[in-house]
Length: 333
Image (tube, rainbow, N blue to C red):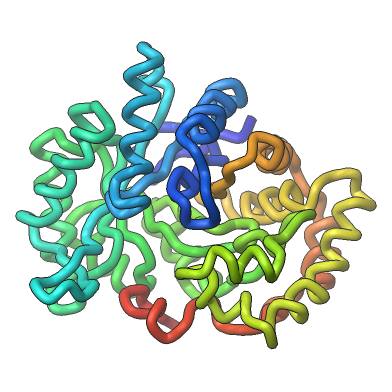
């Protein structure tokens, strides 16, 4: 089992974590019992890192984790728990971001209540508030560490230059970014900067929002789900068939190697550096087993080269976010 340090000063955690957005209905309906089954599977497999956020299911994700911990005494110490805050609504109900210490601490306090713990292991600023200097925001996170409410700090979807600025105030344990064979932008500086500064790069959506699996979400399912997924540029009528066709050879190669496509995708992400951690999500214990398969798979240079031939940089059709979905994440080059 691959274990990796969370940043230069952090604890060792499983290189494969679990993205608990799937404990909400983001990718389709789920139940608390399905979520508990995933958490039991994490324990059985040795997956220690859980990633949640206050906005996942409007608190549902954190509540599910908290209830599981309550129902299974002694399991809190077996998990490394991360959560996030800053995405909120303004007085008119419009989505906005708040990075003030008051807001972050208030939301973290609520998250601690839902999780049933007095301290999380990692607390992220979910989206950066552009009007506030990131050095100031890093200082806010440092105050939360001093108060004993989180052991580590991080940022989600920031640029390498922002990470460097934040690190002048205090060490940043982790940066979370979308990273997979279908999203290679972190290689334009973020992978390298994280390695240089001793910051973990936590890769979300490492199986390409299902495109890098044996059973991608069907176009009909995407339309039924609607919402964020239905609006995503890669799931539209003019891009979805092209993305399926582009990834079919990857599925075929995985089958030739005797592994699932999801396992191959996870193994590729983890091969990108000893500081990279993958946090896929799923509602299925069968799919979870494929993710664990990838965690235990070490790819040869020949396999890595062949994967690059099959899915070179820039193969995906459609941007990873729509115009509205790009509000918040920092683009960089």
